[in-house]
Each structure stands twice: as structure tokens, then as C-alpha cells.
Image (cartoon, one colour):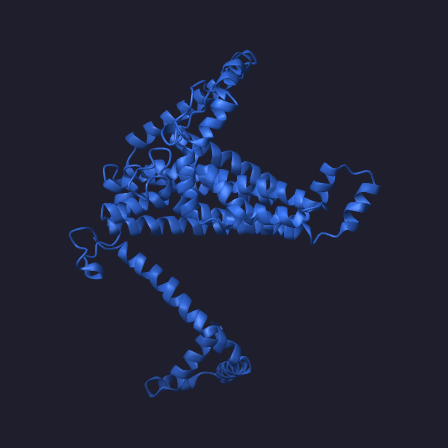
Length: 450
């Protein structure tokens, strides 16, 4: 940029309308001449590089054009649509609809009675819970099976092929199948849990022991603490002016991240990560006033597609669908670890658990980082399984089953609020950009610390 600026000034110096600059000292003129020479050499170098690799550029040009048409243009169009009053009355005008700038964003964030706000906070809460549990579940199950398949045994290739079956099944088929399996009366899951395992009878026997140990009392006190904090936050948000609510919203998003960066520099990335998880979890619990059950349910044949059980009815099928991908990538990572490291650790007397934490875990960190990154992105934008489980959009997933993508789909394509739907999509994209960059920063800093 400095060379460009000097070159620009030098060109102005040669312009007839700026002859006054010819009185400049020779040293300054020399600097400008050097800048011009470097600028020309830079252009020659760029042109020489292009000519050298021109065939490679020609080969990737179709891909770049395709990505521009299929990715960049829709993103730009979606951002522009978020500034329009595009609904059932103006859909005929399409991109020529009235331009309202940030009104759609104001409607989403600050108008509690707007149609798109109905169920939006529930969708945000469910998306966070869904993303965390699905990401952890797929990684945990994938790691266990990868460790098992990394051992030598008869039929290992067949087992590996069979374990890939859930990943082969299309997501919409997964949603349909699990929708039938979760049925209360005839679903195979309730038949197995209640008619075969009799978990409601076991729950009735465990509850007295559970309460006798005081675990139910501890959970109830924790729920009371969360409830008091949530009521305090709700009182502040309803009685305080708009500027205070904006500050609280920004603090809830940025505060845990700033705390992580502070503790990362002062102590270590691990300490910062633990503090970030604790503070972010607390803010999440009080924001939605989430209460935990104090004892096990003794109900016979639970409703899985209604009430609070719905969140587990969409989490479990997603874990079943995606864990083979984690298993495959982790297995590939395990097979790159030299066997000599495990043999040397075994000679030194290291237990299998210690060998895992001292050898396997550190060497698989790059694979874990990629899987967590992909898991966060895929799960936040998850759509097919949930929409198919509840009648391809004809049914409503409910208070505990609605996700951000199903909420945006319903408001955009069923209520024809395309402008506010586009604004919600842009907000979700911005949040994901922050999360992805934070995760990559955390991973790099932890690697540098190590």
C-alpha cells in the first residue's frame, strides 16, 4: 500500500495541473522514482508468475466460476434481500421490493411481538443444545469405535464396512425412519425400553436411593439458583432501556471470549478454555432458565415427539447418522501413529489409559480440530433430519424440537416473510463466522503453548 501511495503521488507530480510539485527536493523525487521502479518490477513479477502457472490457473478457472455462481452470488443476494420488505405482498417485485435497510434486523432483535420472534429464542436454545450434544456424541462414539477397529482381529474389514452403513443412508430417510421408531405406542424404541427392559420399574426403584443420597436436593438447589439468576436477568431486560439491553446482549456474546483471551495470556489456553466453558454455560442456562429433572421418570411409554423429550429425539438420530464419519477420520489418524511409541510406553510401564492421553490424544489433535469445526458448522445448519421427522414441514417440531434452520424455513417459505428470514440467516452466518474464528484461534494458541 505504501508503494501504491508513493506511485500515486508520483503520477500526480507529473500531471500538468500539479506542476508546483516539481519544486520538490531531489531526495524526495529520488524516493518517488524508486517507488515507481519497484511498482513496475512488482507488476512484472506478478505477470511473470501468472505466465509461469497459467495452465494451472486455466484448470481451476471453471471451479472458481462455479463457486462464484453457486456460493458468492447467492450470499450477496441473501444479504441484499435482508434489507428489503420482501413478503407475500411484495414477492412479485422480488429484488425491486421496498428497501428498508436495517428494519428486518431490528424486528428480529428487538420486536418481541413480531411473527419471526415467535419461537425464535426456543430455536436458539435448542440449536445450542443440539450442536453441543451431537458434536460430542459423534466424536465420542467415533473415537471408541476407531480404537476398537484399530486392533487386529478377524473380520475387521467387514466390521468397518458395516459401521459405515448409517453414514450411507440419506438424511431424509434417517428422519423418516426415526420418526416412526419414536412413536409412543408402536415405536420400536418404547417397546424395547418399556416392554423389554422395563426402565419405568427400574426408575421407581432407583428414585428412593437417588433422593436418599441427596442428589435430587442438590439438583433442586442448583435449579433454584439458575431460576433466581434468570428472573434477575429478565427483570433487568424488561425494565431497562434499549441501550442497556443492547449492552447486555453484546456482553453475553463477547464477555466469555474476552475472558478466554485474558486468561490465555496470563495462564494458559487450557485455563482460558475451562473458564470460557463455565461462564458460557452459566449465561446460557440463565438466559433460557433451563431446569434439570430431580429424579427419573416413572411414566410408562414416554412421548418422545412431544415436550422436553423432543430435543433428545432429534439428537440421537443425528449422532447415529454422523458418527461413522468421525470414526473413519479418527481411524485414519490412528493408523498414522507409529507403533513404536506405544511399545516404548508399555515398556516404561504406562497403562492403556495413560498411553491414550500421552500419545493418542496429542497426536490426534489436528483431526479433532477439523472434526469439531465441521461438526459445529454442520449441526448449526442441520435441517433434513428434523424436517422429515415432523412431516416434511407439515408438522411443527415443538418448543423443544425447533432449530434455527427449521425456524427460518417456516418463517420464510410458509409465512412468506422472506426479508426477515434472510436477515435471520445473515445473523446466523455472522455468529458462525465468529465461532469458527474463535475455535481456530483457540486451537492455534493451544498448539503454540504445547
